Length: 149
Image (cartoon, rainbow, N blue to C red; front, top):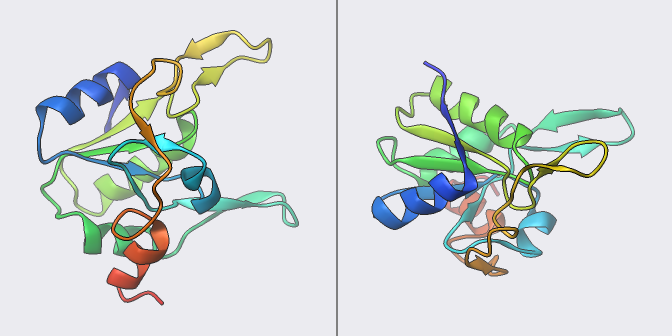
């Protein structure tokens, strides 16, 4: 079963109405530290490798999520615009998470080649944001919790 695609407004509503829901921001640590949805945790799904001109998956992604988020927790996965979130949501669904949704629009929104907004982002809609990347929310602390030092 494929994870459900939702927009930013639906993600915000779910976080308000489902008290156990967790927003996993799958962008890099640097992107997360520059701003993310308030209350989100950071587990990067991967990172671009310019030398090889490809995206490399984070081999610890599922293990770190498992150590931080119980399997039956409603999970909302977001990134900058949507593609990484969809990839991460598929990985979590395949690893047994039953309630996974991914956010089209992510934190910064999705635009076409001409700059037209295809899907507004968390920032565009003015939802609460944070720059806290410390204990319990930042990848480094979550990775340590998972025993991946």
